[in-house]
Structure formats: C-alpha cells, structure tokens
Image (cartoon, rainbow, N blue to C red):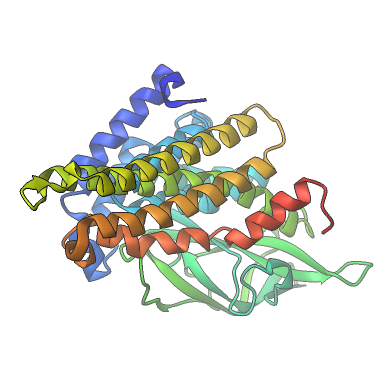
Length: 385
C-alpha cells in the first residue's frame, strides 16, 4: 500500500484525524505537556470520534474498521503530539486487544464496550523492574486458592494504568512450572480498585509527559479464577502476538513524529531568515530536510507493508520488526535534525520540535528495543537463536 492507494474510508479517517490533531490537540497540548497533566478532555473527544474502537467489531462497541485504520490515526496524532498518540495506542493495542483476542465472551461483554468507546482505559502489565526485554523472566506470581488467583509482584512503566478513567489492567504472572522447568506464564485481568492492587506514583519522565505511566504493585491481590485471559500457560505466547501487532502501531506513531519534524522544519525554513535569505534558501538546510523526508517515506512504506500482510492473514513478524526498527530510527534521526534546523529555538519547549526530541528516544525502546527487533529479523532469516 502507498498513501495514494488508501481506500475512501481510510482517506476520510486520515483527513478527519489530521484536522482534529491540528485544531483540537496542537493549540493546547504544550500546556498539558509542561504540567505533566493527562488531557482528559482530548481523550474524551477521541472517544466520541470512535478512535478507541477503530479495529473492533460493532458488536463490541467498535467502529468495524481494521488495524490499519488505527495506524493511520496514530500517525496523524503523532505528527502533533506523541503523548496523545501513545494513550490511544496503548488503550487499544495493550488495553482492549488482549481481551478481544483471547478473552471469554463474558469478559468481552463486561469490558469491551467501555474500552472501545474511550469511556474507560485498559492497561497491560508486562514489564517488571528487573525484566525489561527479558519478559520471560517474569517474577510476578499468581496461585490458585479457593477459586481465586492470589497475585504478588510489581510491574513497571505501565501506560494508562493510573488515570481516573482506568478500569482494568491485564497482568502476566507465573502460575506454575512446565515439565521442562520453565515458568508457566498466564494473563489475568485485574479490575481497578481490587484490594491488594495499588498504583504507584507517576514516573518523572524525559518525554511523553502528557501520558500516564506508573508502577503497579500487587500484594496478595485476589481476583476470581474466571479472570484468566485465554488459556492458562499461554500468557507468554499471547503477549508475543500482541507485541507483533503493537510494533506496527508504534511504527505508525514513529512515522507521525518523524513527519511532524519535517512539517515543522519546512515551515521554519521559510520563516527564519539568515544572511539575507530564508534559511530554506541554503543547500545545507535543503539537503537535511530532504533526508528527513526520505526517512519518513521509507518508514511509512514499511509499516504499510506490515499492516497489509497482517490484514491479509499472512506472516508479518519480520515485517513488523523491520517497520518498527526503521520508523523509530527515523523518528530519532529526524528529531535530532529538526532541532538542528531550528538552532537554539529547537532547544526551547516553546516549539514542538523540542517536545519531539524528548519524545523520540523511547520509540527505540518501548515494545521491543531496536536490538530486539534486529534479533527477531535475524531469527526470521533462519539465523540461530
């Protein structure tokens, strides 16, 4: 797929989100960002637009669209601000999608309507203080006792986990041992307000300052046995599927940030004068912006390709990893170059590129570091694990 091949529905969605980001998000998000405040009103408007329900069927309160529609929305939002974009990405890919993909009919009926409408947010508790990329080293435990799961452990860096509208978190936990001695990892749904489940203070972050990120603590937290999401012992495999899809979404978000850097640099190159001319008159600036646009173009094609393979039911693990690697690199490189184009003003929070620079680095870390993406690509090429 390429941009000129978008269907009418996808093109209309892209245009609607582009206008929303430009008129509703851009004028106010800088204030939220500097205060470290969650933009509840913006999120509510996104919910009313149906963005949180884009890839879900109408029977679950969704819009009946597809995952590519979500990616287009993420790209357009991230052209203006990544905090808003990651709130949507995590709410859909990590909050609602595990329940939709692997939950029971009862779990879907109980939780998806509020999640797909944006009335509530869900979170996915995977990362742990000592885990990071080694998600198989989960230390959080859950044991069955009297028809209940008793959960103990700590999760870190969990997006959307502490807002006033957060309704649940799906956590991975060790529920036993396999015959080969490896841990049996399962996914369990924990509603907000469950005794023994507490949300730590917000992190002081370098970027994504208008998004919500917290540590989660479970101390003899009890939930019904029926809160198991999917099959017992399949939690690790489930989250790998969720992350494969999520990498396409993060690639789209990264492309949006990288494109935003181009947008701002082109505008500034016309406005800023030096030595008698707009700085866009000089070949050094022209070449820098041309390289930035080239990165965006290649990364966009990569995530379009991964999304099309996913929607066609074809293998897409390698393509998702390639898209995430290329797009996150493009975001980081473009943020650095845009800051250079802006000079001293690029270091000021008054300009979006300062925010872009602060937001870009996490894209090379979250949902699988760049090193993990290279490892996955190498394995898909048949190189030894």
